[in-house]
Every structure is written in C-alpha cells, then in structure tokens.
Image (cartoon, rainbow, N blue to C red):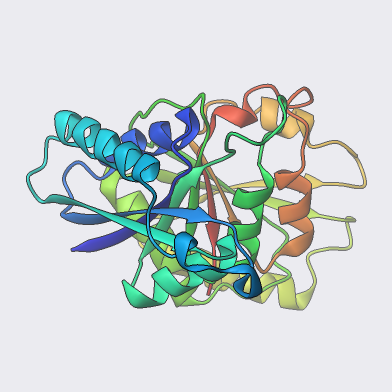
Length: 269
C-alpha cells in the first residue's frame, strides 16, 4: 500500500493534482492523505484554531464526494487531515506520522500571482521536506509517462534511496529516462562527475538511459534544450542539486512556454 500526502487549499490546482494522482496510480493500492493547513504561529494558537471550522469540514466533504465519484480503484482510500501550524512543520509531521512515500501537490495555490510557475509553498515543500515531491500544474492532464527528462551536472552522488522513487514511477508506465548532462565547460566532466555518471547509469540497468549533453558555456539559456525536448512527459530534479533546482524552479514560463504543463518530480535522499 502506497502512502501519498496531498496538501490542499481546495483550489482548482490542488483538485487537479488530486485527479492526476488518482489516474497516475490507478492500478496501485494507495492511501491518499489530504492535508489542509492554516498557518498560525505556535505562540498565537488559541483553542478555536485547533479544530476544523464548519467551513473547512464542508470543503472536505465536498472534496471527498468528488473523489469517490471519480475513483476507479476500490483500493484507493481517502483520509482528511487538518493542522494549524506553519506549512512546512505540518507537512514534516504528517510525512513521519503516516510514513509517506510521496508528496503530491499543485504547483501553486490560490494566493500566487498570475504567471508564477512554481508557487512559494510548493517550492518550500520541495526544498525543505525530506520526501519526494511530485508537483502538478493546473494545466496538466494525465497521460502515460513515456519519456522522463532528468537534468544533472553529476556534482552530487545519487544514492539508491534517492533514486528509488524515480525507478518505481518509471515502472508504472514503463517510461524511458533521458539524462540531460549539464556541464559548465568542455573541461568537464571531472573524475568525480564521471564516477557519479556511471553510478547513475548503472542504477537504471538493464535499461540504459539516453544521454544528451549540454554545455552552458556555449548556450547561456536552457530554452533551446527544452524546445528540443518538448515531447517529454515529466522533469526530474534532485533537491540536493540546489543550483539546478533554483534555475528550473524559477524559470519564467514565457521563456519556456510548455514547462508549466509538465509534472516536476523532486528527489530527496
């Protein structure tokens, strides 16, 4: 049984993420935990904040009715959770308490400005909670994942724990992985980068990922490389690789028009 946490603010984006989750894991027994957080500092908590308000209860009931109307797998179980706390603290607590395998959430919520690709809450969860996160755009509709793009500069070591989620997800749809090698100069890769490359490739054995090499010294913008990969179905990044994460999470959708339609998986380990 897989345990999936879905933070929700009851926005259209979070509802689309829930629909995506049900379709993606249609053949997998799952516990789906829907967590609604009211951000209240601990020193400001009063009794009235500790329990769900009638309005939140009504929204959860509406959400559960809708989820049960679209689910097709009887082994999909839905659970609701409420917490008055900082978002990151609440998510970390629930990840530990429910032994969460994957956090799945919308890329942005109600409070984000138009044009933002990854909202602040989603970005914070991706970077600060040590659990794999799959972010789903409000524009994304589910289709079988056939090709996954994995940008890396090989400056970190990808351990087996970090890669486990990616390997599990690729097995669900028998997807191919394309590793986008990003090097700063033609003097790279270094010996350490080569070792990390070999370990990463071996992790996918016997299926060998496609390699695509990109030198940032030749092309300063990643736009062309993404245009050349517009048929990919998902992008994967490692949270440890902060430089790459910052580049991709804060890209303007006007520069890369289709990036805001792709699921983004961020790995931890």
